Image (cartoon, rainbow, N blue to C red; front, top):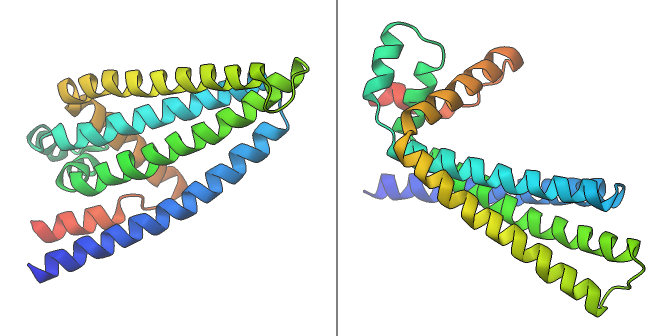
Length: 199
């Protein structure tokens, strides 16, 4: 029990560090990119960030809802991505934590920061200063839209994640397998090693 608790604490700390680093990187990149583009491009970037959060939230839930059995049949036929899919399902808690908590939460934070930049750019393009009634109104409106798209998108994503978990995880596993082969990077190396140990 102590060993499991130690592993859980270590994983939590590693996730916290990864989140801190990624959040800082994404915030700097998004702020830098948004500061040099028109507000309409910035708005599109905000929606892309929101969409990314929704997709990763769906992946995390699909991992917890999926079952191993269909992927074992694929693995016996050496279907590309089947081993990665098994690793994802067997380590659903870690995979979901990364997708939902790390990427999902970072997307929410960054989209909020990006929205602020877009609001300032939009208000400035119409000749309104920061703190004006129009700028505040635009801020409230855009923030509400981003929140609605995030919550509504995640609700729809949960439906697909629960009802089509096998297809979603298999698609994600195939993408990961392709990236690992092309980039020669072991994305699921830790998961695959723990999967082998559990056999």
